[in-house]
Image 1: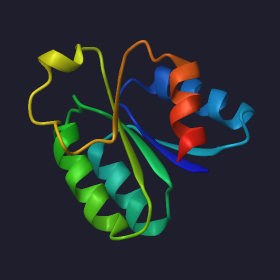
Image 2: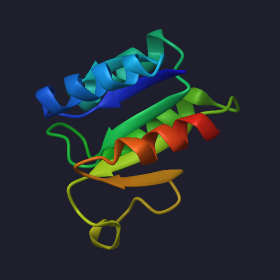
Image 3: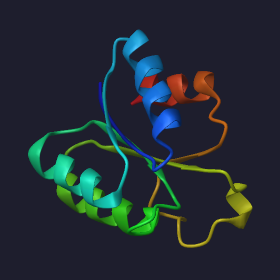
Image 4: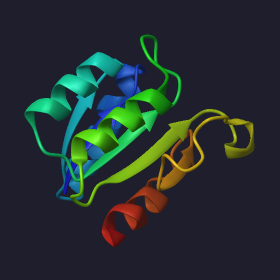
Length: 115
């Protein structure tokens, strides 16, 4: 599975990329919303893990644009945030899954395996 990781916390994103590669996934990091949108316009991803608080655009807007870019092909969007799901506004209906930081890698692995 080809996964886009969108998180402005570069060390956390890089670690997640390494963990995903150990599970035989291909992963690419984007540290800003613009990097993520540029990557999605140049490469096909099966899933995206999107931090909800990015410096240049809200993660919800990134999710809307990634979903539009994916069109009708299967695409899994996972919101990641340091906030509890009940504290997050505007994410309902945009994402297929929600993971609170620190990310439970076993839960993420199950999400990606089911996709």
